[in-house]
Length: 174
Image 1 (cartoon, rainbow, N blue to C red):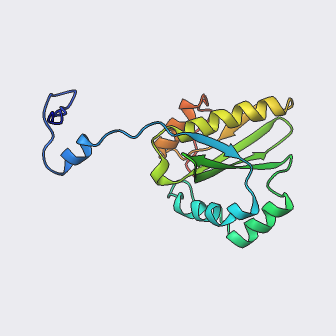
Image 2 (image 1 turned 90 degrees about the vertical axis):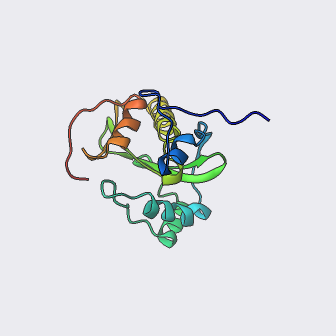
């Protein structure tokens, strides 16, 4: 059998050693296969868990509880003209959710929560692109879809940028 090829740093040509070697030698994860669907009451438990586990200092939880969310999903409160939720599945497994909230006759804002284990594979970018395409096509009055990322939340800023969003302002609060 052929020995595994040695990976070298592109910049210096050095071979990684020690604990960093394991990270450098790891195979890159493939692109995520992303699907969006309307959430149902049975999704409330994992959605509430995602709300908590995907939260950061820059993106605090929305405060979802499984019982209240299940009731609201069953009643259709998350599928109205003013607020529409999406369940995010990555590689067939629940991985997050997005909520598009109407903020005026021509404006809406998207909030996205993706599990930390699913980040870095393009899922957030794909979700934002699909949401923008869908909501602009479905609502002729919608002229602007925005998202908000704390000024120190550079990964989320990159996700918005990769999805075609452009920075319009800087925020220090969440």
